[in-house]
Image (cartoon, rainbow, N blue to C red; front, top):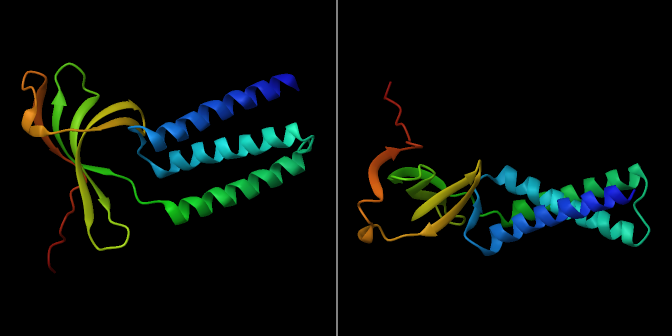
Length: 162
């Protein structure tokens, strides 16, 4: 039982630090499903740890009900607070030395209007759906470190008239 507690503490520490890093640093989880998974695991492991500290949540039924309640609360939190994901439209530049570093134009749907917000950022891809984003001014780039690629992604195709 002690090993379960130790692994639960480790899982909570890792997932909570990823969620906090996503919220308070330039670290960015680029897919809402991955973000929801980390949020759910962090919240549910925290509730189970607190339940163990208060000598509750020892049966499988109580832990399953706890997971269902926490999952529902995480879904409601995500539904009411999610502002949309930034999606890369164009990769402007790629780093010569490291292909995981790019400068991208990204768009995100504006929540309460019928338009888009855009930004130009330097992206360092850490893992799938995880990246480090930094605002960058493309007017002052070192040309020896970056090559222009102008790779268009997520193009909208206009259907031909019938």
